[in-house]
Image (cartoon, rainbow, N blue to C red; front, top):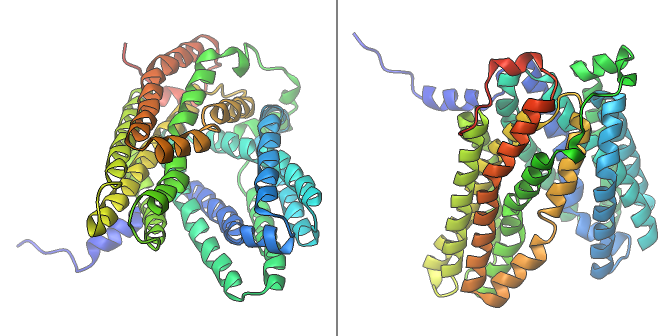
Length: 436
């Protein structure tokens, strides 16, 4: 006689699938949560901190953030080379400690130039830490687990940002500049715990080679700056990631300036995005096994992006509840673009980076991704708010053009990898096959 599953077993099974499947993936997920909780706690109240505690005008805040962004851009490539020379785990842990020091210095900052100095130092070690983190994850994980584990880490990152936002909101609720002044120390404490957690992670193969003295042997073959396929791929991936500009800047501004939707809808938009990015990455990334899959996901992401542009464009002429539903749907579809391109990005990183130069490749990725995306906030905002419907279609066209260019770029990078990359023991387990 057949039996029925116990009530709630489906839900418990779903929740179990949200837990990373291996001990290492669980440790990496915890690390992601520690980092993003601390970062989110400070970021939530950073506008109040910079304007009312430090005393900067809004214009100076923007200028300071721009200067830090430019500094991070220039630090990216040399930071990546340092990662390869010293080992990703060591650089990751040490750079985290220096970022702890920057957070500890923030309560004592009292002017624009003092903040710029701290922000530039933070940018330098943020570049090193980011390159080291990505290089370590790809190096330490078996080939078959790389995309799936990074999906779980992405979910954990969003959980942490949500917790950090709640903590930052509690700090803001005190309505006390003294509380806001010392909030960076809470972020510093969590980052310090994060640094300790990093030291407890296992050494990756590249760390072991560094420890054995092999780092003194220069990697053979051309580096990433002589790999046009990688540079083009990361440039166009940077353009595809401008879905974040649509998500965080353009659609919210459109809602306020061009629709009759209530402003409180913004909270629902960001809440929906956060929930989807917590629960869905582990599911949406499962279809990415090869570079062919990754290119298919790029097209899926592009389709979601274009649909979001068309739906949002229509809301200029709608009223009431229809506007609310369409704006919300536009935000959900651009979240679909984010989720799809995430899986593709992780696959490209796993398959198209030289395993002997992952830090350097990560640095080049940061450079060309920035070139492919930093122009988007100004251009997309101008196109949407000044050109209206035509502007939204141009934005969609930019993404379609980048998607079309991805195929040749990835094939070029894959050919370069076949010719020049050293063999990686686990790479044979999964063929990165491409269409002809």
